[in-house]
Image (cartoon, rainbow, N blue to C red; front, side, top):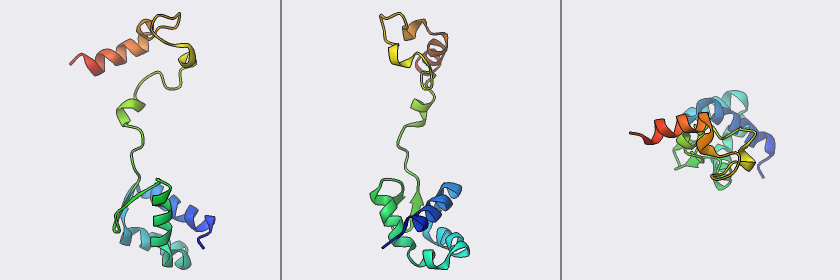
Length: 108
């Protein structure tokens, strides 16, 4: 049975590296906990089942869940997002930030 502390240790190293080979990750984890390093592949399979990593048996990467271009949209974090829609008082095409982003993205 894999404990949460072991998973947390491995996940923390993956976050620091962004992507790594199994050998690189094992080397880093082994320095912190040799016992966890022994179960590294099993831990990676757990993280893979949770969709937290892509793991092909050798390479470990964090999957891209949301396209980075979507993350650039100025609406994320806007206090008016819940009520913003075309034709409403909070119309995205009247929003200076949205219009500027829209033109940069789609006026090519």
